Picture 1 (cartoon, rainbow, N blue to C red):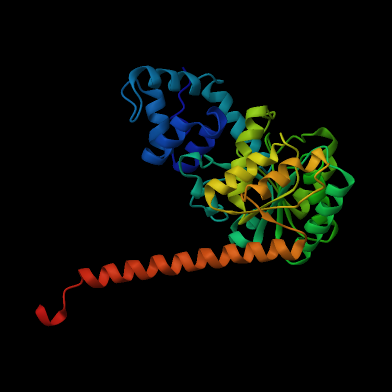
Picture 2: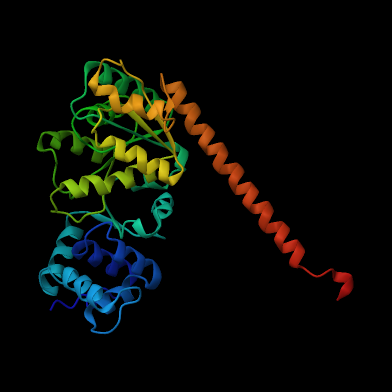
Length: 334
């Protein structure tokens, strides 16, 4: 059995190992990680005793999944190779870690693998806006993606998307064309272009933005990984915009994740006769998304969300202060 704990001597190295051996967005791993930390988690994975929160059978299955990997020597070699390739790992609490991801709770990524300008992750939440939509986009969808991404980039916002064909590719390209910054959240490793036809685009993003993934280098995308990365796209930004989406578009999952997180969601309406806009129109009809007709609407929505966050923080601060005042004895009574 691979000794995982021998490689995780501190929280950083332990989370790096975890990102190599554990399935992303795994509920058992996420809850345990938040409870005991990565170093202790790897020790529990190597031990035979009880695992907090898991019964005996569930603990055995969990351990088996984590140990279905190469030897400790192979993992150590992989980690050294990734470091030589300039692939940076971020973990919670480190400089440039996007604290907005902590809103995901037990679904927070164990670590993030990055290539490019990680400082973009440390910007205020309202400075990042996610644009997503159909892979098989129409001329109308592309036009709106160009307009929105270009204007947002020129206003200083960071355009977040998933690097896929269609709306997301147009959003990245438009942000880059204006000299702006963009983040591509990938479902596979940051060292391999997927789709392969976007190799040049990803190279440009690395130079003028950031490639980021919760899965380790070398990992290929799967349907589940595409679904899982939707929560990251939603959590990274104050606002998610669905530019164009059909009834079964994966971008609708990003919108649903944003709604769960209490983030602002907007959608661009399309012709009622267009199947490519069915999902977007339904989001608006169901009032899960604000109707957006241009970049001014997007910026207004993002700034409203920022104001709401600020007011919530002020309200929370006042409540705490009031509670402290009630608990503090009057000095005259001392």
